[in-house]
Length: 411
Image 1 (cartoon, rainbow, N blue to C red):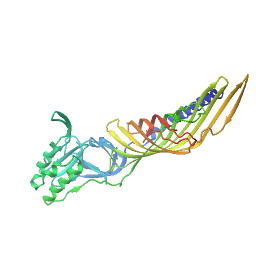
Image 2: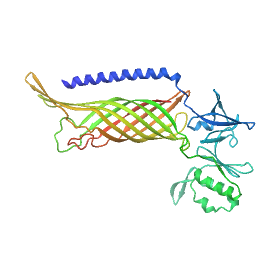
Image 3: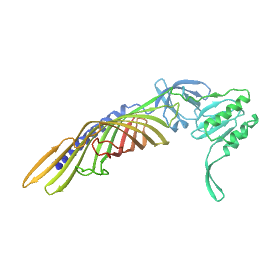
Image 4: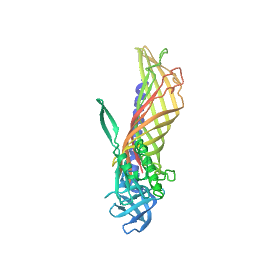
């Protein structure tokens, strides 16, 4: 039967894809010693313990490690520095860090003046004119009122802030209404410094002056299903659901904007996937219908990527749209008639009329790990949300569902 023939053909195609996948993996492994370090070397400086400023290149790593150490390169020699070895360091037009605020840690310099503001992740630090350091954090706390439990934001930081700036007749109601964030605290510090007749030097640079690009390859496995099972009032050629599992290959470019955020980036990709969906139904002992749907697709996924948990193995979430073009499609219906010992096969081309261009929403969640600073490997789960109208025939309900896993190698 033709169905058995196409099943063998699918197995052959997938074995070929697996061979290509193995060769590509070996090629990547052979290249890995020559890959550049995961850090981006940007113009910057460091301040030595004796106060001397040294110009050079600073390794921008884009995660929480810049609070514990940093890579600095002068000429061709690079070295890792800890907070105990320098007074601070900085990357031109991006950020500056000081080791003089919290013991054994770098903190980001937000603004300086009579009152200065520093930050480490979600914790803010205020340094007064006489060198006192106050830590501001906002934690969720449970409160019970009238027998009902509420989850509220801690207000302790407001009391600390008001105690620092109160000598300048700042209205306590203004602080009482604030939510906890860097912008609101900095606004009060600027008011205080202005009240003292001084200016505030703002070190934040929220512009697109720096754009960093990571690039990599993607290898994945996608489960696909073309579903027309909810169609009413028509005679289906065969069953209403077609399923397959195929490899997907692609390249990607991840654009990071360190002036704006360490956690958010814009990702653009280019993927290729070939799918062969078969279905077979026996109408009677003498009538069998088989359908072969082929999809060769080029897709361009565009998404925002957000790191939701930092660490040595960051957890990320990304979502966006994928623009898909089916450049090589076919949909053929074969009808097998058995008359005695003779089998007659009739062929109907374009059993389904396939829409060539579609767009879908998609999401990915995954974990990434950097290996010795040479490259980064990501393991992720993908889902492409179904959309209607893949088929242009009378079947109006035709979502093309996809889900799977992806392995990404990037630098």
